[in-house]
Length: 376
Image 1 (spheres, rainbow, N blue to C red):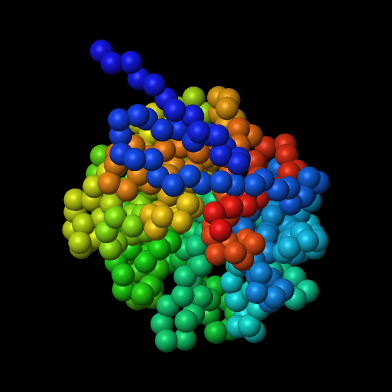
Image 2: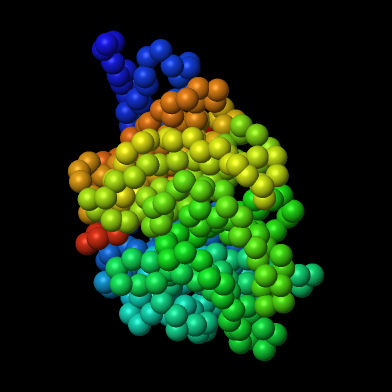
């Protein structure tokens, strides 16, 4: 039996893990850590992004479940502006809901459960739905590019995540509702999986094809992960640079003390027909990975994978990046933090052409932070 050695290469903010005897190590990734606000909304379930003041810079959005309400931070000085008071859930998106050229904020409220949009400027609240939800995605369809919100609750902790809800903006400002059944799981993301120019939906095991108005025609489901049987996931999609089509990442997101694998699924030439290829990134992780995302963090043209563990798991709760090995088999891990995080966001926050990461851990915290990518 051969002894296995692990090479540790310390980067500017993290530890780089490489296994000897595998493919050449990918280019390293380096990050600098910054605090946005150490006294932000308490229990920061909600994190989002958007240029809310129209200056071309990506601003940060935050919401607390316990107190502090919904706020946004102006890039780059992080001056804080209150949008509204209240208790906020796990997701929000910035979109021009009223068509006036600026970005409004669509946000899930926790107490009471509801979905609303807040009109920029002034932040007047407009009700959309009283449903209990965990994830939302903003889509558009048709020649008029009408707003369509896809939404799902989580299928754990006494809730049901067995429907995708479609909330469609009407000409009079009201919102219609339609739904399709899915497995009782957790997780939702949007991406153009089939390359036809519109956003499809991704959950555990299947992706759901956008065919236009869901009130007029069905959205078919396509199986991409037949052997994945852990239903409570965080899903992400994007290019990993190994073929022409987007890949899908699944991370087990609930619950503490459970374990499953972290995997990426690569599509065939026709993503509607299988099989997709599963590549296991890490074979056993605790099911508290409540974030996954894909971006090229080290500038080698390949999509890397970022994940984060919520703080209720066994220590250490890592915020980490798995660097794409290219033709190799082993994804190499860079640990950015052992303080954990939850429902993070990836964007070029400082406008220098590379991808940064924004987040906060969800429980009994008021700290919001971002990791600056130092590649460029």
